[in-house]
Length: 243
Image (cartoon, rainbow, N blue to C red):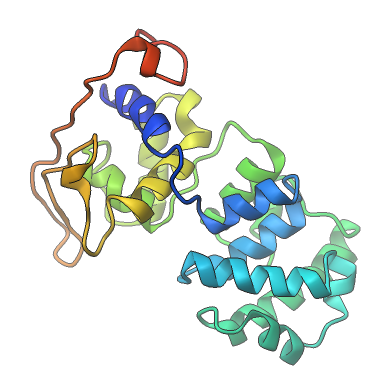
């Protein structure tokens, strides 16, 4: 396992406190981890800015809050409610089809296994993992989006070319205790500090000096980081805990 994972995760736990959370996390928190709303919000969030996702999800849930009521909506109505999320026409069809399947095949409930979630239209491993973590409190999944893929490579935890490769590599590189938190910590850090455009990494506690070149897939040596923290500052377990 990569030795610097634990120290960095402990620092990130403190550093993201007060930062703006990802949209799906906000929805999950406000709706008491409702599996259906987490699922739909995650479907809408793909390649869409968080503010847009949150606004679109709110409009949609104000009209229909369950698979049965949402399945009754027309595709054009869903399109109007979720616009301007990216690929809103495709997502509207996926949302309606997903709701119909949930009603017909799963009794109106969101399934709680990876295999069953992947049978839903538009649901890939990222969406399924996030639903399992947020809605079903799974401790056995890692959700990898572009931020997790980018930052975990820059930190030197993995050397991978795709998010799916990154997910599998992170299972090997990190201790299970960190799996449910990797997405929350790295996405929050990636959206607010270590951004893909105009990053502010050099002003943060964790200073990433290397660069993972996404276009060329070329790696430059990854990281220097400052862990100048006393044990009382560490919010997750103790400084001596294993990585």
